[in-house]
Amino acid sequence: MQKTKIILFLLLISFSSLSFAGWVNNAKKAIEDDQYDLCIDTAKPHKKDEIGLMLLAFCHLQNYTFNHTKADKQYFKSYMDLLEDKVSAKSLDNIFYFVQLSDKPTVVKAARKLVKRAFKNIHNIEDVPKLIKFMDSDDKKTQKMAFNSAYRIIKPKRKYVQKGGTLREKDIHIMSNEKLIRTLLKHAKNSKASKTLVMIEKPVLKYISDYDGKSISKLEVKINKAIAKREKKYPKSNWYSATGKIR
Image (tube, rainbow, N blue to C red; front, side):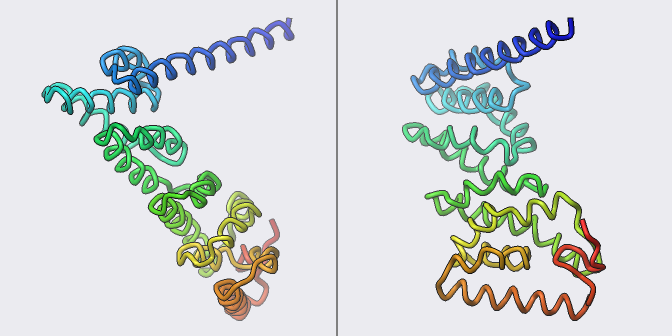
């Protein structure tokens, strides 16, 4: 009986995933083919899904662009207001789909504004790993926003230790993540990337010898100075705890 329930549950999940992918693909094909009313009709039942709101917003924007209809303008603004509050790290892949619709300049412009808002809305340490691929972006503006967001999130964690605190396990796990550190080291010439590495502190030294260059040498000096300063203030400390607490 239990096995049957599990199978039914898995089938339900599979069906739901296929159903979701189906309407999204249909709506995307419609907007790509400039069939904006069809896109709206397809996405309308899915307003609770973030991608549904995006499709509705940008299709109404296109209708307004071509027809100057007041209703479409109002719908676009309403949906964008909702999205600006909701978008975050998990939204970026969906937003960049619209950024890449290069033959629809009004959509691209609006989507880029939404990208900025998504980065600004990122506040949680759990979202930092989601920024890594954007640190390697060919788009310099996107890359800059990714570095700025990581620095903004990690800096207060270092300040907390400097004030006598101990970081949470999830802070320790993410700040010492090899992929994050190596990506930042690869871009050490970037000011915010370098500052973030100093904020991470000692875990960086485990990987820094694999890199060279003037910026790396300067960075290593800064990290060692930061460690010395911490240890002078808190002799029993480690990189994540002023009291030397072991996690």
